[in-house]
Length: 308
Image (spheres, one colour):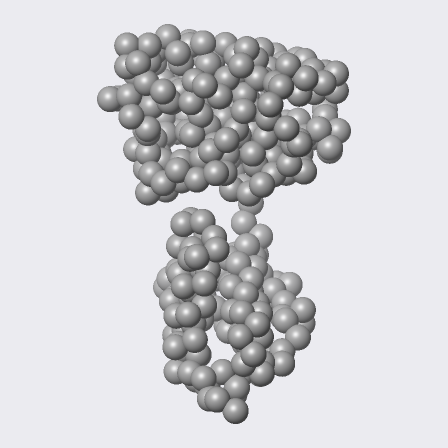
């Protein structure tokens, strides 16, 4: 039986991950590999590693300065290890480990998601707030639609049909354009009244740039997440919040989960099955989604005017 040093096979595994996944996922796997896995077992022989050895890597993983890792990070670590072991099995390396038995320690802390309070949300929409920030309508649009930041950043004018948006692409970190996070992310969404208003305001703001992008940078080219993040950091400090750009998605789901069916909410935010057609947009927004659009408009009317 061929003896395999883990670090050598891990490089081939990383090449496989890069070939079959997006750049953002690949970077995450790279980070987990070199921070938590390879320092512990890179020099060991694959055949000498047992289930308990792999579990020990998860159980003892810590962050910088010995900081306890959150449950999500440990779950990602487990996923990377499982992916490697499955890869090895496919390569006939005689690895007999029941990956289903690997677990995330129950005591691992769950890090809560910081979202805007009703007061902060209202302040974000107040006239004058962020008037000097060319991305103010982008932030508001995220809150009103629940789109991923990368999805909204990837919108072009050709993707908007009356009050319908077709999500075809995303701009991820590094400026790379991808075909969205997964097959469910590519979808058609009806826009509520407030989101339509923000798009109109954004179009007016950037009309002189003659850009194909709805939320471009100052020259009309595609904007970058890092640049927008710097803008948001300044505004979020004024709003006295540590909420991230992605938290707008959490906010939307939190607000809407008691007003929309689980099926419709997933359909709007891109967790549902992929739509069958992108051809005839006039027939996509059926009665159920039309009602959902009206419902979200009413909910945001309440939140932006009277929620305490």
